[in-house]
Image 1: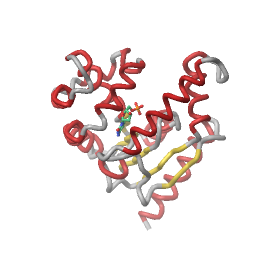
Image 2: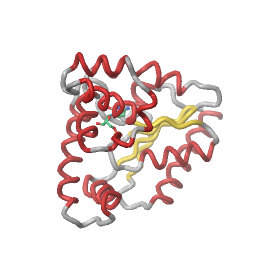
Image 3: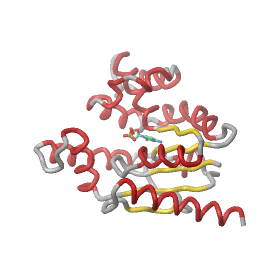
Length: 210
Ligand code: DC
């Protein structure tokens, strides 16, 4: 069973994907971390905005970087959205993601293009969304335990810029697959969002098996 979960940053994808994977006892891949690992390596090699360097970093993907504590740093976050816009970088990461998805028993993958490009054949596709304000307030609470603090405006502006870059790029832009179930998590807490996601997947799998 392959489950695809896409959506913008801060919509709750990774947390829900992890819980869904645990629920079904299958593997989980946060594909954003692959782009972050490429960005981290490209920054170490010189310049993540240089496509030759970024493509080289993608071909030399070092999976141990997925555990690197710098993966969530601001500079890596910004660079990951630059490298993700390069078609040859996306192409270089495709085989690994597809092999992961097609492992025995299946897997849950979360990202931006799982339902549209990586696993168009997924058994269930979810597109999680939320207002930029709800997503920024969650993120700033994670960062400093305060949804209304000074950091909020910075996070909101950063999130809108990243959304725009991820949505308008030519290569695999952030868009819901035609057959994805859209869930707006703006007003849902973590448990309610998980329950909604699980119900949607169960409904889709029941229909497929019919
Ligand atoms: O989900 P995230 O913030 O960790 O993703 C980091 C960057 O990678 C973000 O700019 C979107 C991009 N990304 C992508 O283009 N395709 C994916 N499947 C996953 C992430």
